[in-house]
Amino acid sequence: MVKQFLLKKLSQYVRTYFMKHTDIRLIIVVGSIGKTTTKIAIARMLSEQYAVRMHEGDPRSRIDTMLQLLGIDYPGNKNSPLAWLSILRAAKQRIEQPSDTQYIIQELDPWKAGASTFFEGIIRPDITVVTGISDGPIRGFGSIEEKAKEILQVANFSKYALVNRDDSDGRFAAFLTNANISTYGVSGTAEHRFIEEDSSLFGGHKGLLSSPLAPHELPIEFYLAGEKNVRPGIAACVIGLLAGMQPEAVVSAATRIKPLAGRMNILRGVRGSTIIDDSYGATYPSAMAALQMLYAHQAPQRIAVFGDMLATPEEHEALGAHCDGIEIQWLVTVGEKAERYLAPQAKAQGCQVRSFRNAMEAGVFIGSVLEDKGLVLFKGASEGIYLEEAIKIILHSTADEKLLPRQTQAELDAKAAYFVKE
Image 1 (cartoon, rainbow, N blue to C red):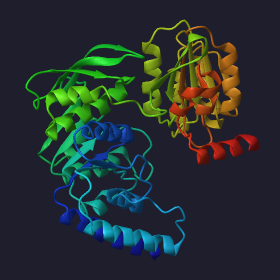
Image 2: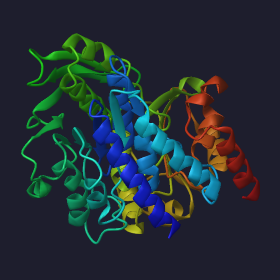
Image 3: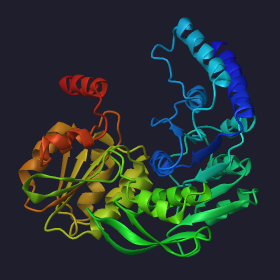
Image 4: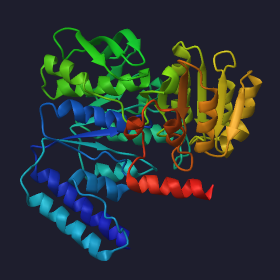
């Protein structure tokens, strides 16, 4: 009853807010991969020239999404009636206050069927960016097609939609009814296309952006590792051009788009080693992309560290089957599912495999076998895996710990309690 009341009141406030503040442009980021990275890349691009409001955290519910749209923090005590009264009062006041932003960039997660229909009655985005539709987890949906329809419904009720051409299966195009769309990516069929000329782990990606919005191909440098992180950069550049930024300003701003903690972040390790920190989270598609990135870079030693993923047993097995014993000198797993399903398949491919209960044990082992100038990939889910704690053991400098994910004091305290219990 209370939840329904909050949903109704906040829906009214959000709808009224955008009706009154017609000068604010709303950009929605939706998809099954890379939403947060894309959202933050767009915010960093537009903030070079405009006042931008964006919440860095993932929206946890419809209520949380609406609070983020209004720029109001979710209450610390969600069970306190007084806290919610204060929230509703702040939401009502937000409507009457002068606009404090020009762009709102909001991540939207259609976590179940009907979520998009709910928001269709509240907002009409100026631009929706569809980051892709992968065959990853489809919790809340009966099939990937149902999930695709839910995601693309947001694009359909937007004024304009920008769709990742590389990570969206062509068969889903039938679900798009919005005629005002364009595509981005590295594919030659994308209207807004990044043509790579050079790349390296620490140097990022250099190339040309071809876009009908620019008078000529733009020389772009993305200090981002991995092709999957280039796509958010491309989307940010296109949004910058759509927002009226000069091409030169877009080129300059692109160099300041940095990787997020735990999302293909390149760090320096002990003994001249290089760490690919992709430890923030893991699904099967993102783990496969990370593995291909590991294979793409030469090193005297490669180590792959995989924790349990947000994936099925079959997907864990499929990832293990792609682990090549010639390319990988050590395959390290953390967690029950990775040990049970991924490790045996990797062993069958000739990999040396060691499995551990927790990240701390894994980190000590990796430190003992890591060779000079080795290359180590860390990829795993967040809850109960915490691979960033293994990374700390082999970091070149403790000062770089701040670059790892989940480093707030509350998160560090929770992890300390977890490892003591283990």
